[in-house]
Length: 274
Image (cartoon, rainbow, N blue to C red; front, top):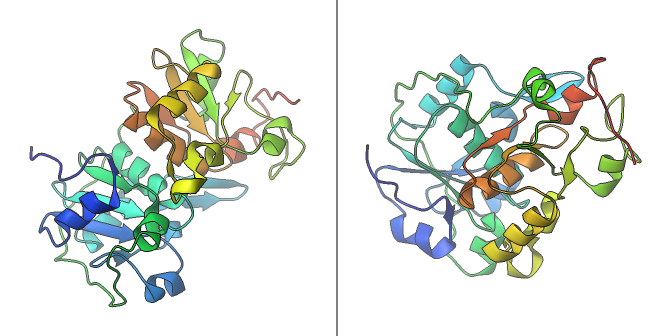
C-alpha cells in the first residue's frame, strides 16, 4: 500500500505542492456555474447528487455499490488514487463524498480545509479550463460496516454507556421547533453540535483549532472512548462532523445515511423534543 500524498485535512499550500501528481484526483463539488467561474487547477467537476440516493421521504441514502463503483471508474479513480474534495459551502458535499469513500474502504483521501473559500480568498492559483478525467479504471466497490450505521443498529445500541450520538443540525431542528420530516426532535440521548459551529468563520471556513474542537466535543460528552454516530437530516452536514472526528483520531465513528429523514419516518423509533 502506498503512502498518502496529503493528510486527511489538507491546507491549500499542501495541495498546491502536489498539483499535477499522477496519483491525485481533485473533485470540485459545487454548481456548474461556480466551476466555470474558477476552480483548483486540474479539478474535475462533480455534482453532489451523483453519489447520494433518494427514496422519498428519505434523503441521503448510500448509492448502490455498482453505481458508486461506476462513478469512481468514470472519474479515473482507482483503489490507489489519493482523492481530494472541496466545495464552497464549508465542506458538506465534499465530506459526504469522502465518507462514502471510507464506506467503500478507499485508503487515501483528503478534505481541502476551507474548500474553495480558502483557496480563492488566499490567492492560490485558479483555472477556468474544464479538466478531463484520466483513463477509466476498474473499481469494484464493496461497502464496509465500520463507518456505517443504520436505523436498526442505532435502535439496538440506544442507552449503551459507550454510545454517543452527534446531531449536526440547528438548535431549531434539534428541539423540534423546525422540522423537515413527519416528526421533529432528535434521537434520544443525542448531543447537539451544529456543524456551522465547528467552522472558523474568520479563517475561510476552515475547521476550528483542534483544542477548541476537542473542548466542544468533551463538553457534550462526545469523548473518544465512546462510539460516536453522526447524523443530521440526510447525513450531509454530519458527514463533515464525521471527517472532523476522524481527523481528531476518534477510533470508533459511524455515519448514519438517511439520518433524521429516515428515523422520523419510521413508526418504531423513539423521539425526544425540547
